[in-house]
Image 1 (cartoon, rainbow, N blue to C red):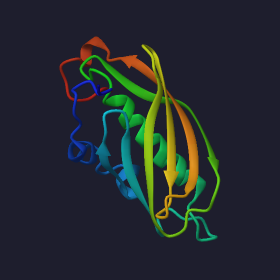
Image 2: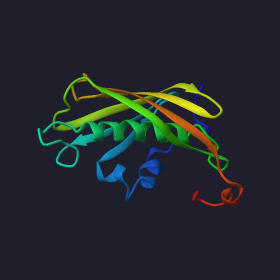
Image 3: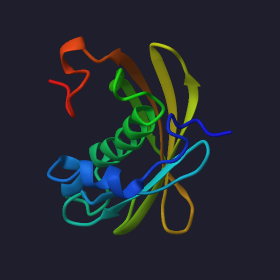
Image 4: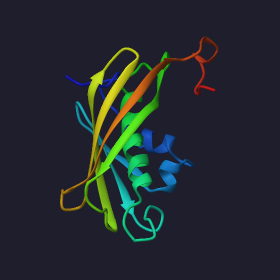
Length: 152
């Protein structure tokens, strides 16, 4: 059984929605959705490294929250609810070297008003680079926006 509201996720549509944002600028790409997880990649290059040449912790956190945010969004009826980040923490366990990082977000709890997501980011060898937990607030779309494409 799938966790997704519409049973299937169009990753191309997610990536299109991210155009022109920090997600696109940092090279984050959603690559797949399984029945209970969302996966993506982020390239470690001049956009995402700190001066020491390894992935910046903030870039890892942005990658983690991106996966959790999209995951939470697609568990909801987006005409009625949306999700926003409420809290995130991260443990950086190994340096992310230039190349491609892979991330996977899985829900820990899909509550009515909050969701908790576990995100694991690994390097090209499958070794853990960062583990993160993100709490998402589930909010109702204001009535005046219910029949439009955007909130706000």
